[in-house]
Image (tube, rainbow, N blue to C red; front, side, top):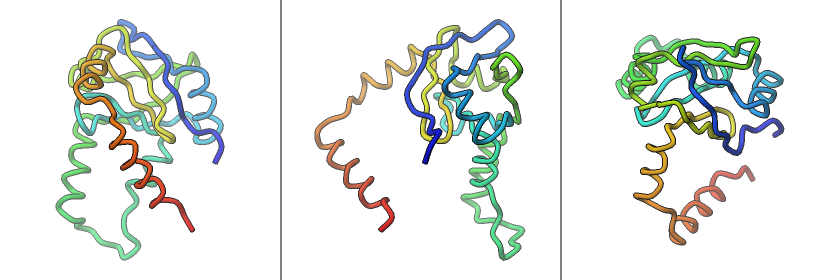
Length: 155
């Protein structure tokens, strides 16, 4: 699968609440998905930027025409949409992050944008460093991750 969003890049949040998407991410997103985005925070510590087709695929309703989804799904949708909004990459490669999301994620001027295969995470640098230092990856973690990844591979 080409055009994966991988790696990380530092960026700056401007006074208007916009972040310039790094060129490698921008090119991959636009080529594969277009400029439409869904921007939210599911865990409050950071912001997630989903290409709109990725978000729409995640949110597809069941083929059986169900109107009332499972309560857990309702809660997830509520959380995602509470502060989330549609956005798009502008002609200068920037994305507007709404004030509520910026406040929840504690975004200051310096941020780190991390590619997570088909979406982006935007972290405040201080908050991310604190989180990473509290629980560094161990050899046991790597073993567990390797097993989980092997179990996910199609046969």
